[in-house]
Amino acid sequence: MEKYSFPKILYHALRGHKHWQPAWRSPLPKKSYDVVVIGGGGHGLATAYYLAKKHGVTNVAVLERGWIGGGNSGRNTQVTRSNYFYPESAAFFEHSLKLYESMSRDLNINVMFSQRGVLNLAHSDHDMEMLARWTNAIQLNGIDSEILTPQQIKEMEPLIDINARFPVAGGFIQRRGGISRHDAVNWGYARAADALGVDIIQNCTVTGFNISHGTVTGVQTSLGDISGEKVHITVAGHTSVLAKMAGFRLPLTSMALQAMVSEPIKPVLNLVTVSGAIHMYVSQSDRGEIVLGAGADVYNSYAQRGSYDNVESCVAAFLTLYPRFSRLKLMRQWAGIVDISPDTSPIMGRTPVQNLYINCGWGTGGYKAIPASGDTMADTIVNDRPHALIKPFSLERFESGALVDESAAAGVAH
Image (cartoon, rainbow, N blue to C red; front, top):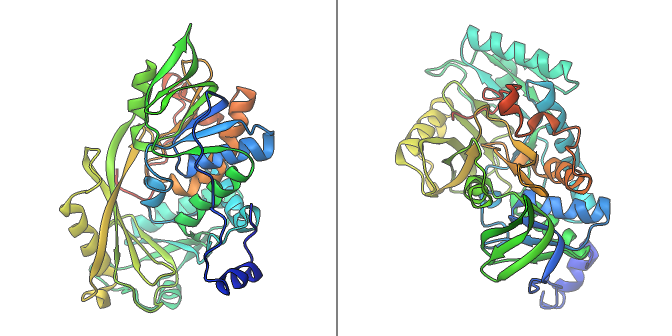
């Protein structure tokens, strides 16, 4: 793998940037692999990377029906945080946040991780009571969290109107939270996994599974059958479709989750700001765009267009707090297909089919979980038992009733 560095950039610049090594190979699939990972998004690529890096399993194929970064990993708002309420969620996302903090160095690519802080707003005394409880729980989980007054919020984010139609009563901040560049995360894991011998196969659609006596033996694809000792499904909103092909059902619903960006302007926003009450979250990208996150559509869908109602309500909520942006133009809008479980927490681990594993149900929180999910699922696949951090998120919890209801901490209306 060609190392990225400033001298290397200067070297190639002087030669017209014509001789860069491709970031990853485009091999034809082999007949068999030790592990077949279905899904070339951030979760699938991270799993393949950690299989090779930490466990020495390099005979791995990542099958992507489109192109790398063309799914939800390229359709999100890039927020990274670990301020979750329950200890199970907090431990997992704190592990993920720590991996993000060292990711640029580990993957030799600048993922532009900006720990500018994630601010959650309260708009009433009742909201403040709930946020205080949330903050205390986060601190008990050993994670940074701090209550702020309206005046402190105004000092940190001067453009916010704290006396708006829904006055700001206060809030709390996780200062270590922030945003990163989603494309760089995808490309970084793809490049690093490829360098370790992982085959990344794009434009390869999985059409079925080969299962013998309750054990998966491979997959059927548009490029032919591929044998695999172990198979891992991590395809976000389409997980239930593949699970049905394998002969079991999952408690998931798939919806379109919307986001949008404005035309680029000079840097004016300092934080990632979230308002659960009026539902809006906003940050400014490194390119100057104002990034707005909206809610999930209220109906099941695989359309990546989304609804105009969500666009309108999101923009209205944004302008309630930031009226100075009223003449700013939206540049583009998109929707990603998210899979939402009954308790809005992920489903990770083994399935009723032997040697077949799943990583799904992330809803709106999949991006911030990429490194930790890859790390823990790689360990789970190699040892055929749930990693300690994901044991609470097994499929069996829906039989036992040991749910991890993080719907409030998700910060998004489902």
